[in-house]
Image 1 (cartoon, rainbow, N blue to C red):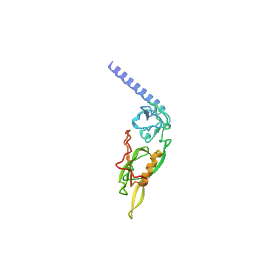
Image 2: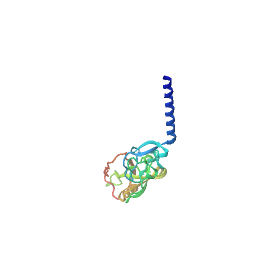
Image 3: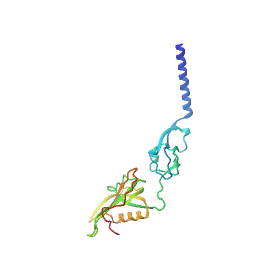
Image 4: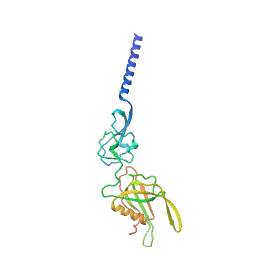
Length: 222
């Protein structure tokens, strides 16, 4: 009886292994897919914490499905998306460069002092400027020119030659393009033209408080 039981057990095991192999053959290979954890409104930036990554059979995966969270970098939803949706290529896109009423404006930022190299498209930054005191009536000052400016493009590092008191110096600069309101565009143009230094302050992820545009002195009048 024991021998018969052993033979039956081996037979059952062989049958199960055959069944599993047949199921695997029918299902085929598997690939990772991204599924939304939450509803996402149109034009909302997509981040890794909004999705789950799991594996499903390739034969059941939608066409053009996204496989890795790196594909969400600097992307936004192209339409309102529901939780549980498999993310596909047509559902994500680069953010729109300009919203209605915005202006596109670029300035050169010093690579050493302006956090250039760390700023990427779709980041938000505060823009600061320092103004020298030229007369007894005009103080030196530092001012936050713009709060939460959205970066839409970062150019290539280049050299800029400056003539300072007869000495020629070379500075590394990066052209950075912003999407701004008309008033902020004017403020940035003024700062670039008359400030001795313009700096960027990168805003941390998840920070929602918008600070007031303050200064430690009175900005020179134009």
